[in-house]
Image (cartoon, rainbow, N blue to C red; front, side, top):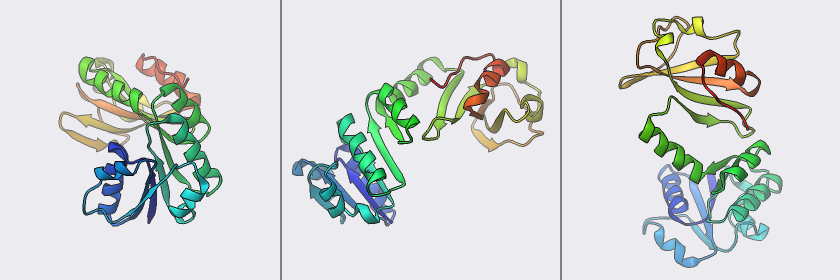
Length: 220
C-alpha cells in the first residue's frame, strides 16, 4: 500500500521508516529539504520538497493512489488543511492530523477528521503515571460518539461478574488487566481486587456509566 507523510520531523521521519519496514511504499513531503536528513540512509521512499496543502504536491506524492495520509508538521493549521484536502479532494479514507491544541483536536474529531492531540495525550500519560488515575480515555472514534475508557474498579465490584455490571447493553466491558495479564472478558468473568477494566460506551450512555462506577466522564 502507498502512504503519504507530510512533515519530516521526528514523528514524520519515524513513521515513514516504520511504514517502509513493513514493505509499504512511502512518499514524504516537507517544506525544508534539510529535514530529510532525519531519514535513514537506507530509506528508499520518495522525498519531495514543498507544502502538503498544495494539491499539485499531493498529486506528485501519489495522493490519488494513497491508502493513507498523515499530516504531522509542526503547524496545526497546515495539518488540518492538508488533512481536509486529502479527504475531500482525493478521497483518502485513512487520514490523520497531528494537532497541538487539544481544543482544536476535539472540534476536528467531531467533524470526522481523526487527530492526534500531542499535548493532551502526553499530559494524560504523565498524569496517569504520577497519580494512578482510576479512569482514563484510551480510544475514541473520529466523531467521538464511541469511546473506550480504562477504569480501575473499586472494592464494590470485586466478586461480581461482567453480566452483573453491564446494564441493558448501555456499555460493554471488553477487557481486563489483572496484575501482568490482560484478556478479553466473558459474561461470567468474575472481577478481582486490583482489576482494571476496559469499557466501550456510546455518547448517549455516558451518564449510565458515570452512575454505575461513581465517576465523572463527559463527551465535551
